[in-house]
Length: 158
Image (cartoon, rainbow, N blue to C red; front, side, top):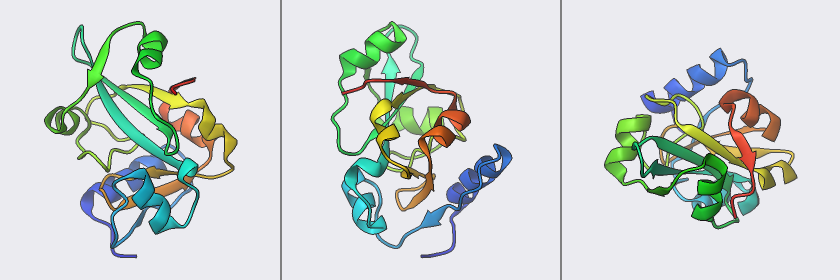
């Protein structure tokens, strides 16, 4: 483990402010992909709460999908949940809307609050791990804590 970067510290502060007692951990190895994160942490791939940002076609709002690392996201299911078309966001859009780089987008602490969709299969795990602001930082929490801190829409996304 290494000292936290400013982005990871920011996420830690937001979690504290939301009343979630958890510790952001930053690893020397990358946790950028779900597979990298599972290997660095030593957990199941499904326990990784990967963050994928989409952009609504109509007005360009950010949609953050937090899904189990073991599933493939079905964009049509996301569109049905929010009632509008989406497309995958590019790195510039993700940084502008969230304040974080792809591979490190946390569930909280965004510049602009996105529409948040939470994959219901994350509830299959007692503990899940989410990105914490950098491609090397994560924190652990429960499914119920994730729902509480995001007020996200829970649904089937695969």
